[in-house]
Amino acid sequence: MIYVASSWRNALYEGVLAVLRAAELPFFDFRHPAPGNDGFHWHEIDPDWQQWLPAHYRQALAHPRAEEGFRCDMDALKACDTLLLVLPCGRSAHLELGYAIGAGKKTIIYWPLDLPMEPELMYKAADALCLTMGEVLAALGVPN
Image (cartoon, rainbow, N blue to C red):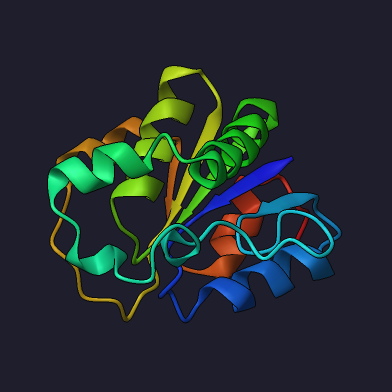
C-alpha cells in the first residue's frame, strides 16, 4: 500500500490519487481514510485553532479527536510499504517521510517540473525524486 503524504492545501493531490487509482495501485488517502471519514481537522477541536499558543497546541494533542486522527494516520503509515511525498507540503508530510525512511520503507518524492522550491539536500535519503507522474509510476514498478 502507498501512503500518500502531502498537504491539505496541495492542489495536485487529487490528480495524483486519480493517476494511482487508474493504475489500480492501493493507496492511503489522508483526506478520506475510510468511507464517511473526511480526515482529521484541527477545527474539530477548536474553531480558533489558528490562534493557539504552544501551550494550547500541546493540550490539544491529548484531545480524543487528535488521538483518533493520529492513530489512523500512524496505523496506515506503519502498514504501508511505500511512501509517496507529493510536493508542495509541510511539516507533517515531511515527518511522515522521515519516519518511512527510518523504517526502511520505499520512499518517493514527487516534485512537479514547474514547481519552484528551495532545494533540500536531505531528499537524497529518499529512493527516488520524480519530476513527472510517469516517473512516479516507473518508480512504483508500473510497466510503461
